[in-house]
Length: 299
Image 1: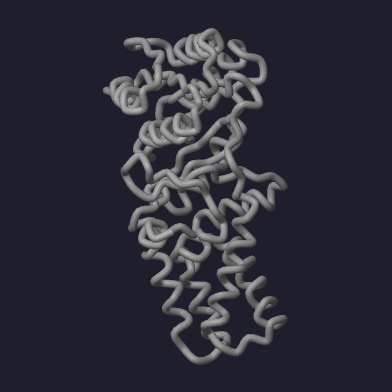
Image 2 (image 1 turned 45 degrees about the vertical axis):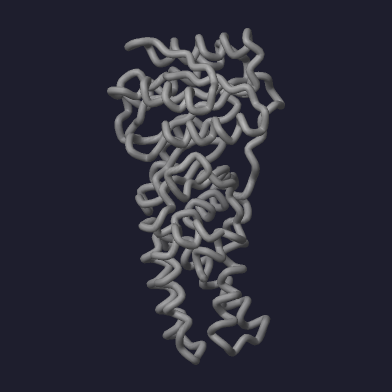
């Protein structure tokens, strides 16, 4: 919790300043609206939160701004609660996880941390180095495989879809619990590159019916509303099943998770946040807890 508070202090400082006065009036709500927008909460989520907060204040008959801050924590937690869902593995053996994201979001590093999380739960993990375009991507994943003492399938300059196919086949043959495919970083605006990801997805399905069972998008918590745009684009192309939000380590604003939650609610579906990254070490990948995140975001 302390690491999370440190990671979201940029946001929490801005929001906390709103509640330093002695009156609950329109000026407070206007200041709060500005603070939420600056935290990358986005207009739809901000309007929803303010409406809900006004209702909570009226029902509780709160007269102290400090109490209103507590009510805001509850409102934010309620918005984020649908995103709180654990990653489940083992229903299908192997459980095949395809990891996507733009370059620089921390995709390969997150895979290394996720591998550790699974290995600590006694899961047998196999990695697929399907990011065959980026220089040293294969070597980077091999380092993570070594740290976590897991096997890896890779080819020098091989076709990403072929590497993914071989890894799933190998995972089945070796009795692995989980196969994780690291794909090349993609900008969602580059249609030909997104088509490559679709090809990988189709090829994995040929190797194992029903796979991939999870399509995870890694998003940088510092990118604000651009993170929401990435979620929309990758979801449309691949059908996302979950998110890993990285780099919540001091500069991130954090409000974009509320924007993602409201977008999901408006779409009638949920893309859960399985993990958040609050630092660089292997242990800094945390499961997402809506109330803890709301407390860190507001307090």
